[in-house]
Length: 300
Figure 1 (cartoon, rainbow, N blue to C red):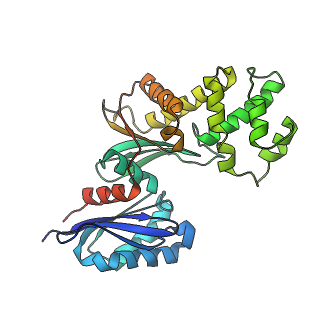
Figure 2 (figure 1 turned 135 degrees about the horizontal axis):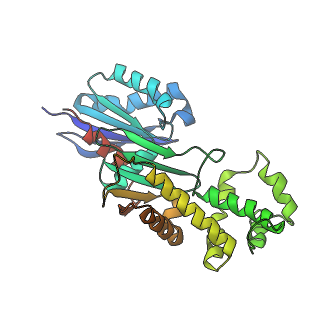
Figure 3 (figure 1 turned 135 degrees about the vertical axis):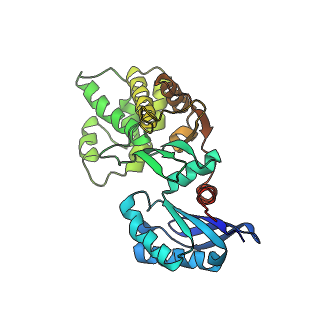
């Protein structure tokens, strides 16, 4: 008898498992958090085992997708404990971003670009591996993201005041956004550990609006952001393994999903780099994607 498969979306508060077996098709169950950053490694493992246990005799593969499982060192101990608890199940652990991309494309072999507060590009391969580019955080990366656009707007506006950059009308919206009276207040704010990255990144739509209105500095910033995002996508492929025409590429994250200006700029820049993928809107979810990945690695 063939064994089924299941995907888990490991949320910070609750987790969901979507299982497909001979007797039960597409059943969703809810359990406690399986995110190591929310509840710690030991509790996350315990909660995952509790979620799988009632179905374990029916499963041949499980994909656990969580924001706490993006890198090899984060997966190693977690996977070892799961394999010890369920030796007959084949496990795949991945980030929620990987599962979101698979869920949006309906294909476990695809690529995706996520632009929100931060940025990351991921390619899912036929052997169940993921190639990641970006996702380094605001100090080392996040090129093309809402944070990138906002930080560049503040940085380059201050340079413009000193006649070291393009002229701009961005200053009033920047000061209003951060509730400041003068440009000098931006210096301690952006050098303070108390600055919330998400608060800063939320300036991006206003910068994009200024670009649409014709501000030359804002336009240069969003063009640069789109170029950086396109380079993230290109870096997923090597010269020997180029991106085929019509290869599925999911465009996800708030900046791409809610702003048609950035979305179109990114598509144009990707094409300008000689890539012609099938662009797919990121409308799926991580639970569906995790189940799709689990199905693709099911060996029973």
